[in-house]
Image 1 (spheres, one colour):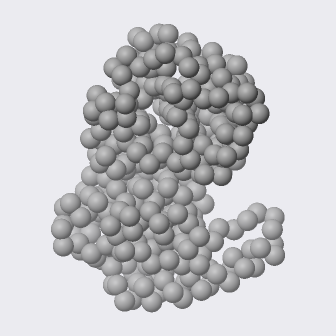
Image 2: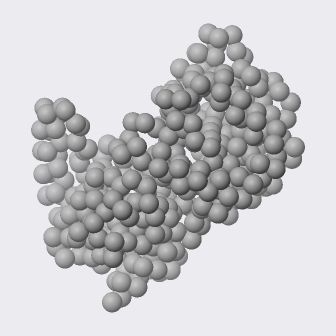
Image 3: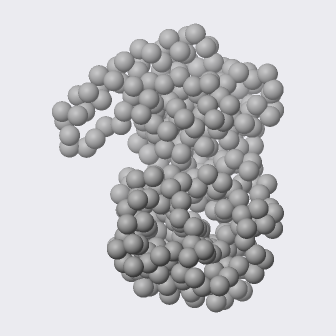
Length: 368
């Protein structure tokens, strides 16, 4: 089988594509897989690290209200369409699978025009514009959340598959992860992050959390700030007279997320689709703080799907109070039975076989 995977911009589109590609390769070791993404996205770095070849296009996302900027976007879209037509012709894929974002549009739309079977995966409970545009010509639409179906037009194409995560998350062992990361069995481990790019509001809220629990025995805090916020947070801590003790770990980027999640007792994070999938597959209770700056407020609906099942607490950013966050963390920490129950219910929301479900459908319909 020859497969083109397309999508990107952020890790939320890239990592599911890699997980699907890994499952295809597991089933067919002779499968030829090529990724197509955007020059300005993260895929140019992340995909080769995962062992796949990638072709990059100058495609960009449209910016609302900025007409002059969008003229350049249109020019780059034309260039991308020309380039991707040659890629499709030269590689001659049997199927094209898109995982969303502006990076997926040229490959999916041109493949559909050429009669190549296409499949799209929508990670969020509220779908993105690009996937809604591509639904009509797609063979199947894979949904990360069942709630997403009502925002599309062709329910007969829909398959609720969940969001694929890498095998490292599914296979991660809590005791082994804690031992490797240097945590004791009785440590309470709080993991906080704002996605691959970081989140300024979460970082600022965590300053109060760090101040409160700095130096507290058996209480570990791991904060992934994001590259752009790392120095900012260190400076703010210094300006507030806070010198982090040994129980506080502050990192630009969390490179070993499967181990960090497996080792954690509680997570404070945004609720992008991939984050929610990884957190629930690992069965970690969460305090989700959805980003308000996303289309359709989709992060809120992602988090709501877990909260309604008892696996998470939602604090909307407009309601985020630093002292209240500390109280919520402390309340959960001091009630192990509630945390245990949340862990079970969080894990029940995860679908560790998501990549398998997607590939089952792709292989079945492709063979037909």
